[in-house]
Image 1 (cartoon, one colour):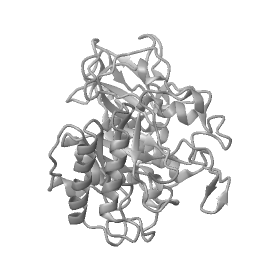
Image 2 (image 1 turned 135 degrees about the vertical axis):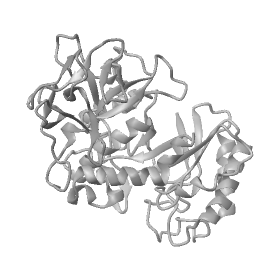
Image 3 (image 1 turned 180 degrees about the vertical axis):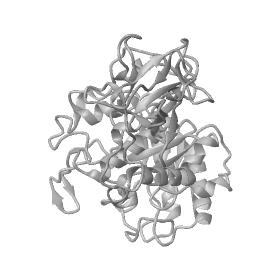
Length: 415
């Protein structure tokens, strides 16, 4: 599936507040010429069935940006695309580098068509500077996720499709800011069942900002475009490649899966005698989460229980004690915490063999040197049935790319 993205008017590397490409009326951004260009591109690809959408403009920004002109021109652009090509999705970006759509909450977009409007948002670790390094990850995740919901995530609750058209991390795995951000992002993306495109597929550039052969460390492919740069990252995001619940996906009744963002895996079991462990989300248990905070394997009487700190979590049938009650705690709402019979609070955790254990809750607040990733879980709504299918994301070369669900961001210049 291809989404055409109007990235820049004057070709170059994007972006800055003062590059003349940021907002309607800037030096290189003539609104009338822009609409003409959108119309021509929509017409050119009319009837090309794998072109499924058009993103009207990348990362609006700069000193001229304002809400009134956003409505004036984005609505004109949307109508122009729809008139030229009624089959494509029309994708609208927000203000402030595509991070802010909050103004839509009180002033809906007015268009002549319906059923094909999508909003897009960009979200990176560096969107919040070095906050993930300097702050406590639980507190930063809670604050940033709340801000994301205020600025764009609310659209999901209003029934609009929200497309994270750019996210990504340094694939070398050494960037602490990116690593901590990614754990939070994957939790939010799973919970909201967001569609996404990853920045970026490319491994290197012929020329970027005057540098010949620049290595792209955010790239899925390596410098020579021959192999994946970080295979564990590909495995980690594969759980989010397919939707958890839709819309329109109803393979089975609504249930919860227990998702572990740090690994991209879910809590599974082979039998009631084997320990709970992490495994592919396609093989996940179906859980129900009751109003009294009990996690029960659907279709059984077995609930998740804590025994002692440092021991395996278990399943049991006596589910009224405190060690069978699980609450989402910390600002991130990603620690599953229970109380032992002696009153001590513990959290669900993962050991080195991916077995599910319970340990003292860590990194809840203040400490910025501590990483809570092993204890971060999300209870995700799902209507996906269990499957033994392999990930779609295993590929050997650029010529063997997956064709389902994985949107690779190829923004290398301008359209």
